[in-house]
Length: 261
Ligand SMILES: C[S@@+](CC[C@H](N)C(=O)[O-])C[C@H]1O[C@@H](n2cnc3c(N)ncnc32)[C@H](O)[C@@H]1O
Image (cartoon, rainbow, N blue to C red):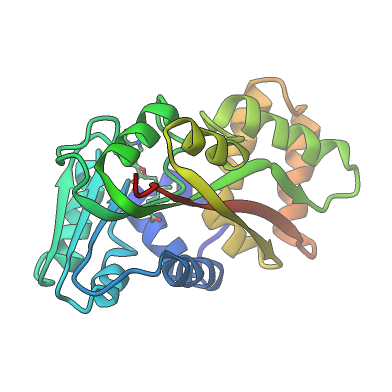
């Protein structure tokens, strides 16, 4: 069994990403997102930052296995895992690449998808511009991105989780508030952000939550950076390991259409 002392952030990314996708929380919101994408038969779907390929098989099924599904990620290790997973699924291809510069023609895809990718990229506006460029008129971008200011964790002294969250939003995640910014980024690139769906995940199991949060490593870094004192950091980790657990975080799923003309 996983332990909070062996946090998943210290594991190879493909392992923890695949396990997160397979968790109850991961499955629930990913299936909601696939439904909301309204993928049509024979269409082309592009997954930006596809990771180990958790969504590619579902996209292929939604095209009736008669379309094209392209996954792109800059990490060769996760692309190797994705290739093992879907390499022989008809119509699916996975590529190593940078989502700031897509190797695709203008107006060549029907759906663009991201899941927790824009939070990490150097320049989210450029990635959304690329998404808008490759979308066909009438196509839709479906961008699921977290907003780490929504992170709440129960602890007797509420100042400690606030400091932990501040470390995440100010130091740990490059674009920690991207969830709330995606509709504006889309509109600036000529897309029409038609809907934003809030997806709030509640974790009552610390081990499951650790798959997302990587408590041990993040807490150590928060202590090193002066956001938490050593006694607070120690008490925090002990509490998460031993007491009843409650944590919640939201991501926002933005649906943005490329107008027909
Ligand atoms: C949190 S993971 C999500 C992976 C996948 N979407 C999923 O739901 O399992 C973020 C992914 O974005 C990829 N990524 C980050 N910056 C990238 C970039 N500039 N170009 C391509 N991929 C990038 C990472 O390598 C990582 O696989």
